[in-house]
Length: 68
Image 1 (cartoon, rainbow, N blue to C red):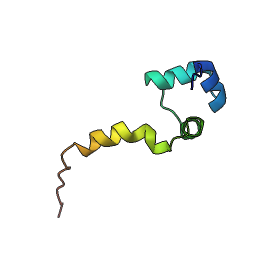
Image 2 (cartoon, rainbow, N blue to C red):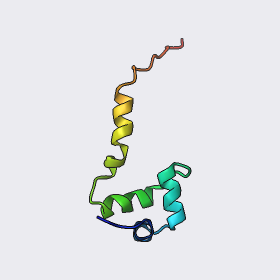
Image 3 (cartoon, helix red, strand yellow):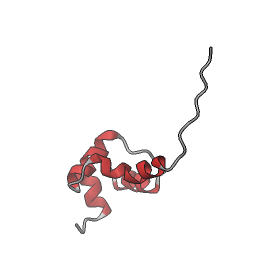
C-alpha cells in the first residue's frame, strides 16, 4: 500500500509513537485499533493471529487432573 507509519497511525486513530509500540510489542494493541487495521488492510481480524494459532496447534495437549 505504501503507507507511512504516520499515515497508518492516523487512519486507525492512534499516534505514530503508539503504533510503533504495537509493532515492537512493547504495548498490547487494543481491539479497536486492531479492527481498524484489519479494515485498512482489508483482512479479517483473525489474520493477525494466524502465526499464534499455528504455534498453538503444535503444542502438546494439556494434561488435566481430575480432583475428587
